[in-house]
Amino acid sequence: MKRVAAVDCGTNSVRLLIADVSGDGLVDIERRMEIVRLGEGVDRTGRLAPQALARTFAAMRGYAKLIEDHAAGERVPVRVVATSATRDAANRDEFTAGVRDVFGVDPEVVTGEEEARLSFAGATADLPAGTAAPYLVVDIGGGSTEFIVGSGAGVEGALSVDIGCVRLTERHLKDAGDPPSAEAVDAVAADIEAALDRVERAVPVRGARTLIGLAGSVTTVAGISLGLPAYDASRIHHARVPAERVHEISARLLAMTHDERAAIPVMHPGRVDVIGAGALILDRIVRRYGFAEVVTSEHDILDGIAYSVAGPA
Image 1 (cartoon, one colour):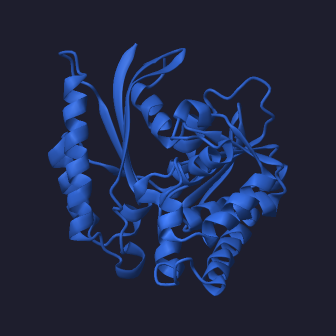
Image 2 (cartoon, helix red, strand yellow; image 1 turned 60 degrees about the vertical axis):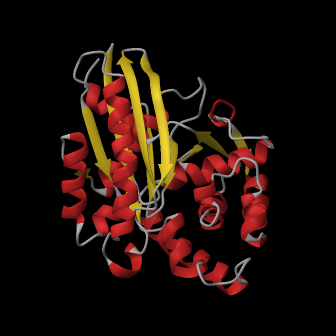
């Protein structure tokens, strides 16, 4: 067993996994998530906002304390991966310096392709027996969405495109009414479809037999589909959401007011204003590629980072 710590800093949230890794897989010690909206305004300004950096560093300091508390007298290796928002930011050196100050290591601002590879590794490590390959793993983030096709033999193709729940909300829905206008929703859909055109040219998505959806937009849709009275990761992990339910829930979320979405039991407060765009991304993927269902995974890039820190078992 090797204890490791993985930190995933995305556009919308910063997450921590402290785990023991062995040849049998991961044993979670701590799994945490805070919505910090690091990518606030990046699509418009090209820079990380001071208040967004402050929120992110505050969350990270809490994570560093947890890592220290679980160190058991030994050094716990840490890998910090930063994704879409920091790739796009002109002032990402400020982010790098802050992370180094908190964790003592530099963050790795990974390419979209490396982000995709890590997501695929985390999502497919514990799939139920009999899950049909090849898999299309879709990681819907705040600033970007990763599409990865592969099987147990490895990744066959991957692409990261700049559609994410925060980016599309800020671009089209932020000032479009409550609920947003049909014209604004159509604009979001048009951006998604243009990105899916690029995906289809670059990745063998049509050959995939199972769609695996990752991250908060997907898990929230799954929680709504299951009718959960509160968010329950154990119920959501590997839940199967039929295509018809994805279509229905996406349409319903986009027709709701902010307060109506906030009242949904499984809804994280930091996801209320971006879930409509995130659900629409999932809906358009299901429609475009004709999947009958989406398999939801609570294991994703964070787990892939942890495996990478541990190295060969």
